[in-house]
Image 1 (cartoon, helix red, strand yellow):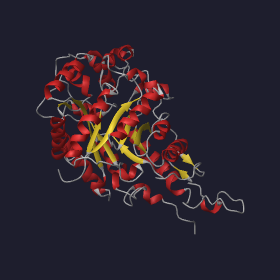
Image 2: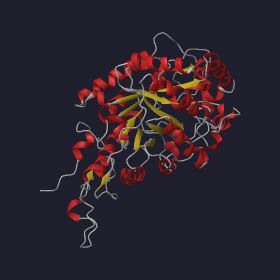
Image 3: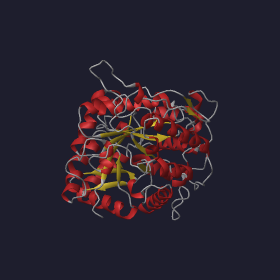
Image 4: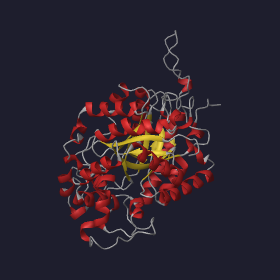
Length: 458
């Protein structure tokens, strides 16, 4: 370890089946309570007690219906359907915590930047500056058809739309209102009109002539995350991301992605070390290695192979039911999540994955490493990943909520703290301060949002 702390995010989705497929059947699982506010406030309290940086809430806007051309398999296993809106529980979680951040997935393809900017500023206000946005372009045809399109936009066009979307929201968050626009003067003026200006955006995909509806939040621009690992996704991350999410199962694979994105960020004029990389990991921990392995075997007995095939068929836009389950998968260009296709076809030169092997592998861990052992064994493996992959931390999954988060907090975090690998208390009060240190609440000067900062008209 270089002395930099390991950063921890909890990983959840407002649904029953997310990274672990079929484990809602386990008697200890409370996954079915995703629709209860107490489920989310309990989660937030557990993570803050464990000094996690943030809770990352994933999302998808369409049902999974690629496998066998039907949503039936996904419904049987509760995979991402039913699902609730991920934004609406954040205020309640913020009310029961003081420092935990919240990163939420929202698609640039199906939002309007003008109204979306207000949503995120509202959450920045209500959380006291603890909000982040995971930018996705959405990969499900079902989402496209249900949200007004006849078919999904091509992969690279989605990113072209996203680039303009970012320009618009940066203008709304950074350039429309001066810091001192709200004056509340004794003369009865609440906002000085001279300190508010329209963004006047005219582009290919969006026209936004007016002023931002909200006064600036604590961070102005929320912390920006990105998870795409296709070449165009990496380029997008290099330009915009402060946090990058990775789904790989070997440190060497993660190292290649980290190196590539950092080099691209440097070419964009950004400090490559300012980008923080988080690998998904599922941790099954107990007092001893033997107990942890027994717990993992128990969890694996509830995993659904068909459900895993249904989820990954939708992610990759490849109907795995139409393939020989025991024949190695070949890379093909799709409009799905190309990084997921690469994960099981080209990224690992030493392994050929069959659909059946993929389903069995992702049943508990969702495509990332499954680390089972005592607190010392888990800490050793997390430290190895940081050293070999060059990552900054982990998105810790919760396959049996809230048991696995609670176990990690109670058993692994104290061991990591004993080794000096994670902090014992929070520094600063905003999510961006978790990234860059106390006092850094606004985007860095080398971030593209910074060029839109307000300056009074001449």
